[in-house]
Image: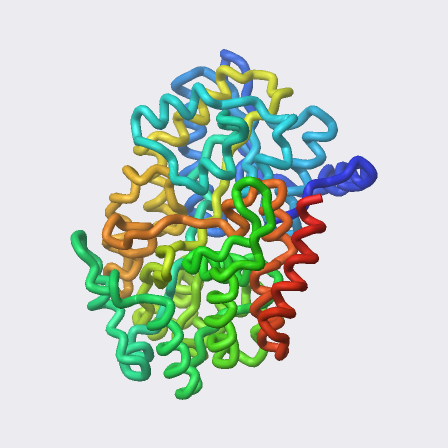
Length: 446
């Protein structure tokens, strides 16, 4: 899902490739200047429809001509076009950027502290992942967007978890406000016991130890729950620690009960396992459930979403953040900032949430009370615990935190944490795994 920063050597190749990529284009007429924006092309078509309507409403009210293009993240279209525009110093005014791309393009992005100060005044602070990825030296260089932003909590089969593992996930995490009975029960130790029980009945937890995003996200949240930092916030390598040894001891017990092809998992593997009925639990956004509603309705009606397990240092939920960045070379910065603020207002965000059945997540906790998650079905309330609720006592997390982003992005892109777990599966000792990671991390911090 994420790409690496482009070098000048291959920028011309990327620019040529990007120029040949198709755009889904919308244009509205106006008389007070022009603004262009590149959106992420949402996999839920209704999300794009509502976004077009909102852009048109802004353009009409403000008498601004808005060019809106929708670019797919498939085949790196969104990423490559961003890199091409940054190198050419021309293109859209506003651009949708994934996670680490804010820090990859700091030199080309306009600070948006003024936009964020107004949004924070209205809705409260953005979550810690948005701040970690969107700020540098105390300044915001991207406005965190709900569009495309997602979490990957637990997503389990109600009947299998109850029958095989004795976990009634609807009772532990009901679709209602207030204390959650599962808060003190759903731990990583409980997760291990349930994984062992479900593997015995042929429905293993479909958790990957591959090198793509879903595997990285799972391993990152597991490490964080044990306080197992690979590199600390100062940029110091801390992999040879008791906390890392503890999480690897846990991993040594978990990996034998994962699917036999766990090390070759890609981001579609766990989806397929859930939709086909082969797994009791995955960690993902609601996309498998959304597909199952059409392709396997009996399975969809047996899926419940609930938060990640807790560990010695807390409960951490994998989080993937999108931003809207404003290029320094933008031609109409005042109108672009007005558009950004408009799109991030509660009314617009909620309309898009309703259109995408709650797939996207706002960065402001005050917006996590939309009814869409409570009303989603089947079964009714299955998405209530998809966003972080106060009773979860959880925090959003991106793998590599709290290392400085220029180091953390390498931990993420090189899949260091799931690879450490995969090495345990191959029979390597904990000492060997730590020594390997130490060597890898020394290359990252140079």
